[in-house]
Length: 105
Image (tube, rainbow, N blue to C red; front, side, top):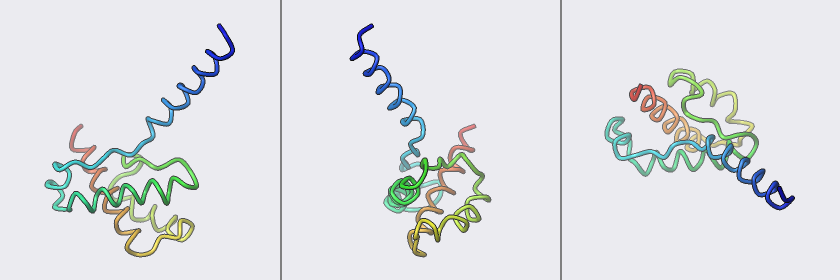
């Protein structure tokens, strides 16, 4: 196997590993089920990726229960420099999407 091919395989493997840690997109069904506007869920996801993913791997909603997310955000809000609005949007997204993943199982 050539060196270029080995490098290409390593790069593709790394990208595949990263892809598994991408928070799910909110759907219209998530919005309707939770009575939260789809645009708000999308904004919460965008903030999660930008603010939380800048220091560590972006957390997935299923990493904690819906009841655990508020305290987890309390722990990290100051370090991530979240204002009240940003924290609310991220929490809303995480709670809704956690409940969504639990409802599917």
